[in-house]
Image (cartoon, rainbow, N blue to C red; front, side, top):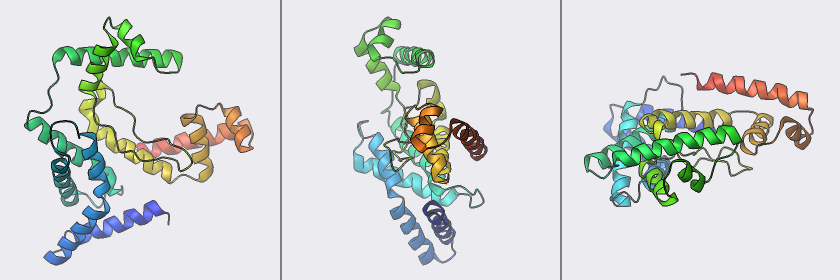
Length: 250
């Protein structure tokens, strides 16, 4: 059993104990779950650190989200507890900020950010690389300063900085676009699920995925680096994509 599976099994055991009729057993299990998963709360709170609420207060709000996750997690889901908990932690913090009036973005900035995001996607698809802020600003008839302000104003929380590959700096976090922000909890869940699916792949698949999709290598370059044939890489890549599609089906 791999480390991820061991961790999931332990969490399921603690989650079961957290619902025990024995108050002492339930309290001890809940405390252990909080301690072992406090990094999730810490990472989420850190993303909101400059929104007008003290970091320690954000931590306390995030812990409330974690406790809610412990109470409501469905043990029959078969997924990692962290995958379920993150959206609840983030949602609890966002709800608190919203209720306290900390989040307010003007309609003009929302519209500008939406246009900037649309242009960025178009140019990235066309060129294969992201345009500069100055280029986006020019296309949207605004200044780079205004463009940066608009994007920062609507920037949603990024997912946790979980490394996908030990041998690389690739992270699960990628900024969500303005259009995605309303579905952020679902997107965060899917990205965590994707990270877990990658963690269960055999080493060869992980190396191929790293080279092809995180370092932008061609199939032939990947084959040369791994000492394989291009045909072998192509076949394995198809298997990888089929596997990931199956893992992401809800």
